[in-house]
Image: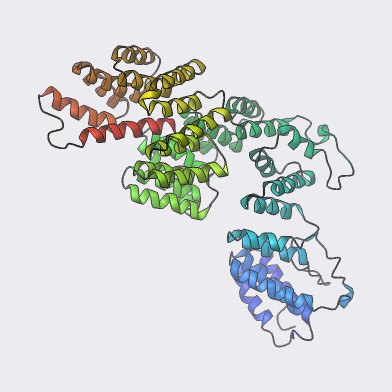
Length: 558
């Protein structure tokens, strides 16, 4: 043969895919190989070229090349070269054996066609290709699980994830997938003890003698069912055994961020970066936390670091969106949308997009983004975003339904109770109900500042300024928080106690010099104290201040 095909296999083994592709083009165009007289040889050559294109991520060309190969393969006589087309080897990773006997692995070829369709977000075509593969490897089963889940065929996804665990109980992405699809920890763990043949069982003690895997399953099921306190306890137990485990630290930080333990989550993410400064997983969540804390210096450094690691990842585009939000909301939105184009299942991208659209007074579009996040995996942030979006365009009934759904999903969450209170507080007739929900939230979680601020605002709206002051001053004893001082300043300003209001605005800015609500509130107050009408130059100033106050509280909650 003019072009030795074993050399292409050697090139690919060493990762030289450019050279493999160029050599492959010589191989498939050789005049010595006729598709009529040597269909098997032609098929083998095309598969080698397809493999080179697949590894170069030229998925469209790879699909076309593989399909040409399968066309020629179908023309091979069944007993040609002593190889039966019905009993092809599935043990090799390559689509064509590099040894002297050149058996074509049809299932592997179809798997790579399906993988190429998956990379191009062509889910239906990928499923169609894989349905003809009867005996599936572990990698094939995980692909099928993802494809069915992306298509909304959750029952099929569960079956394939379970099959993965029967083949190997340590496929942790299958554990996470099953937990997110609502499968119980007991059901997941039972899959470990079943062999792929289903004819025998193995002991859990053989698979997981120290029970760390069982604890991990339970932790992920707690996260999926919004039992965040239980999840944190289980992750803490696992971290005692694996103290510098980047994955466990990241999972813990994500839960802490969801329930509003922002300082703890930030410290956890910092530890992750100190152990592995090149990790990208969930670093956009860390960026969001830094934005809430107005720590723009660390946020700038984080985004710079992420860009230098891999500028193509969805997490990096979300982090860029967070960074640009303060400078240019339109640019920030474009980055959030780009993160979704890169990975249409990336939840922080939808959360960020929803927040930006809500701030841009586009609540209908924001609701669509939050609903997309909710459909992928519901958590407190998507519930909050949906409720605030519905309230912003007058859909009070839908807002109440969503808030109650959150409360039912998270019965022990003070934040879910506050969410129901927020809906009732949006109407004058519902304020008494709102008060009860805020107070219930504070009984459940006495240190929840969000509920305290909301209750103080309710007191202020009802003219109970003294109650608002006494409530907020109780929290001042234990909390150093700029939003607490801003709310007290607003209450004192409404009571015409301007000097007290001034001192609290100044205290807020000492804690957080970037607090826009404090800056604008202080500007208005100084004009009042000088006898100048703060609304004389711009009638919209007061509204702007109120909008920023709302954004500050919303950011704290989200």
